[in-house]
Structure formats: structure tokens, C-alpha cells
Image 1 (tube, one colour):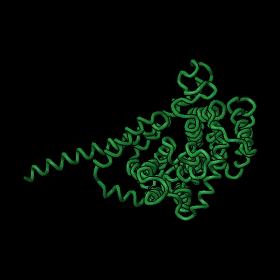
Image 2 (spheres, helix red, strand yellow; image 1 turned 90 degrees about the vertical axis):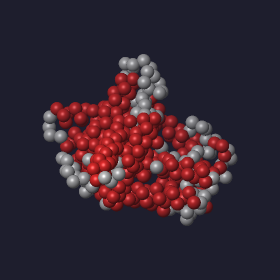
Image 3 (cartoon, rainbow, N blue to C red; image 1 turned 45 degrees about the vertical axis):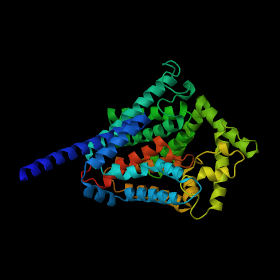
Image 4 (spheres, rainbow, N blue to C red; image 1 turned 90 degrees about the horizontal axis):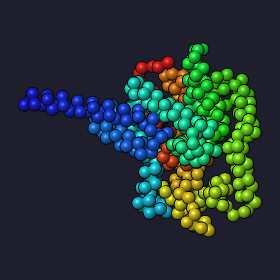
Length: 415
């Protein structure tokens, strides 16, 4: 009987160890899949969850989550959204469906327990870097006209996106440029530093000159200023502002993509401000219309909001054409305020603040820089988009948050 029990325990430990490895390698592989394939993302998330559950060792996993303030803040925001399904304008099934769009907040806590392993951490970051290098290469080659038009890009050569839409690609590319620049700054003088700096410059050029995503343009500007401030302290602020101004002028005068998008934004805003009917392709006018309606909804439901998933229904009561209303107002702070009242955006800001504060405790300078950059990129992007419910952006935020802030639980220190 004892021998049989020993064999069972041995087999169980072996199976649990295999499941744990599956979860870790699937989590690492997400770094490569997020910029490239939604279908692969979903497969890997399923494997992560399966491996995490089958891997056992729940006491240690729960302890790691309890010790990690970023995980707790993410869980607090999801819990509030869960409570938001108990009331509101949307049918119960729709509330739960919309809550599912925030599931990535749960994966922050889950993935943090997997990225404590240094080997998994390194391969995860390498996978993300390789996926973005591939995106940069294909997008740049297509933009230069070396490939046949739209051979890889979804749009014509004037907007050379590859695997994702231009908002997503430019957002990820802007952060990738910051990652490369930060890594170059940590390297001693030599060829590796030069190559990292050149790759960062190429990513900046791709963001500004070849792809339409205006959110990425703004995020890039914020990250560039922060990079110079981190490098040269307050002296870097002037240099950062000068760099952003110089790049903006150069892009405006030499890049049809940047010039046309800038002029289109100005024209769309003027049309909206002049009271003209908002056309379907007027993204600025549509956003201003949604913001105005959203602010009014917040005023009508100032305490607990209209419930998780309730924006579309609240908007329909105000819009002349209810069928044309969006499922979100393209501003994450406003969306949370509409759904949950003031506590929603306050908890999101608390999450960002917690990440900013606890980034200072991460074990390496590069991790600290990347964590601060992630907060700035996401906080800026959420001003113009509902990034937490967008698949690629929301999952990227969760994955990168877990990757970086797992360092709060990690004993081995990397340089």
C-alpha cells in the first residue's frame, strides 16, 4: 500500500511539474504571439490556465499573489467590474460578456506567479523582441516599396501595418522603440549598443513615417521625453522636448502619412466644432461626440454608474441613431466612470500609481525603466482608447505588467 502511494505521489509530482512547465512556456510564448496572432493568443491563454490549474502548489501561488501589490490592485479593479454586473442597463448576459473583456486583469495575477522564474522571464522578453523586430522588418520593407503592395500589410503602402491594425501596431512599436533605447543606454560602449540604438531609431521612423496610428505618435512623444529625463535628469527634459519637436517637424514636412493624419485630425475637429453632422469616418468628431455624451451619462449616474457593459444602452437613449452607437467611448477612464462611477477610474489610476511606485523596487535598472515606460504608454493610450477591453493592447498590458512586476517576488537579481 505504501509503495503504491509512493508511486502515485511520484506520478502526481511529475504530472504537476509538466503542467507547470507548460504554463510557463505558454506564458513566455505569449510575448511572441501578442503582436502577431489573436488566435494563437487565445490558444496560449488556454494552455496557461490549464497548466496553472494542473500544476498545483496553490498555497505558494496564492502567497505570491498576496505579496504582490500590483496583482492585488488588478484584482481589485476586476472585482469592482464584477460587482458592476449586479446592476445596470445592460441585460445580465451582456454584462457578463462585457466583463469577459476585462479578463486580462485576472491574468496579471496569474502570470506573475509564472514569471518569477528567471529563465521564463528571459525567453518571454526575447519572444516579444523577436515579434516586434519581425513586424518592424516587414513593415519597413513594405513601406520602402521593396515588396509588392500589400504583400504583407493590410492596407496600402501608405499605411504599412503587418499583423495588427495601425492603432495597435503603432502603440506596440512606440513602446518597442523605448525598450530598445533603454536597453542601449544600459549597455557599455560597443557594437551591441550601436545596434540597439539603430533598431530603436528604425522603430521610431516606422512609427512616425509609415503607419497611421495617431495614438502611437503621442505615446512615442511621451516615452521619448521620459527616456531623456531618465538619462539626463531634468537637463534631459529640454533635450526630450527638442527631440519630439524636431521629429514632429521632420515628419510633418517629409512624411505623407504623418502630414495627412495631422491635417485630417485638425479638419475632423473643426467639422465637429462647427456643428456639422459627424461622418462615420470622422474619428476625432466621433470621439468628441462620445466624450460629450459620456460626460452627460456620468452626470446622470454619478455614484455607481450604469453597470458593467451599460454604456451602449445609456448612449442609445441619447443618440438620434441608437444603432450607430459604439460599445465604448474610446476613453478607458470615461468608460469606467460611466460603468462604475468615480471609483472605477480611481482604481485604474491607483493601479497605474502602484505600478509607478513599486517599479522602484524592481531588481534591475532596465526593469525599472520599462515598468515606468509601460505605465506612461498605457496611461496615455487610455486617454484616446478603451485599451483594457481591446484584445491586443489589454493583453499586452497584462502580460508586460506580470513580466515586469514578477520581479517583486523574484530572489535572483539581474543586471
